[in-house]
Length: 307
Image (cartoon, rainbow, N blue to C red; front, side, top):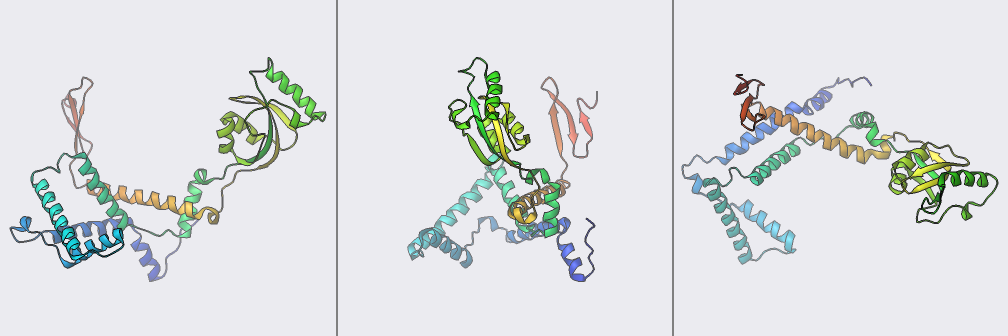
């Protein structure tokens, strides 16, 4: 499919705002703005806690959503005091370095930053993008073959020669024997209608499902083996597997496209942020001692590198 041609100024603008680099720059600008606004030029800002009217209103709204009524004056004062207590403890914990070397805290901060990236890079896919994604991932979205069939079970625990018995059963069925009076009793379904290969495999096993999915409709065939024993099978109807039209699976395709796109943009944002750091990795050698040290540019130095 040839790429779309952007002729009008509006088309060019739409293309520009979809660029991942623009999203990354916007994220960086927002982080810079948030950091800048959070820095109070007054020297004693670390000891100043301001709870403005907007924050009080937010606390009140959160209370109302939980309790389905507005807070009383005393309750609202308690909410504000709880908020102040949280802030005091948080600042004191940071001052004591309790946030450092804490894997849970690190993970939470990473998640919050990734959520911020997701919010700022939210996109609405076009029909062309979804169609292309469907084609590129056809194996994932392909509809499995579906088979309607009957089966008769021969229990190997009760038979000395279940394979020979299956062949003799086929002969008797061809001669007009009634299927309902043939085979051994079991809890297995005697018939499945429009069952996918996966559904058949869950009941009879993968080997049985793969063989039955390839059998032509018509008469009784066998023996067919499963983990439970021997079967003779008659396929009534088979619907070939196919790649569905986008309209049939659009919600699923859009969900997967968005998840994949979010991951791509998170990876891009991370790689751009990582470029601003010098990464030094020290790996142990075969004896468990500190070995070579790899830097972010791929060079190595240290014990192993100097040998």
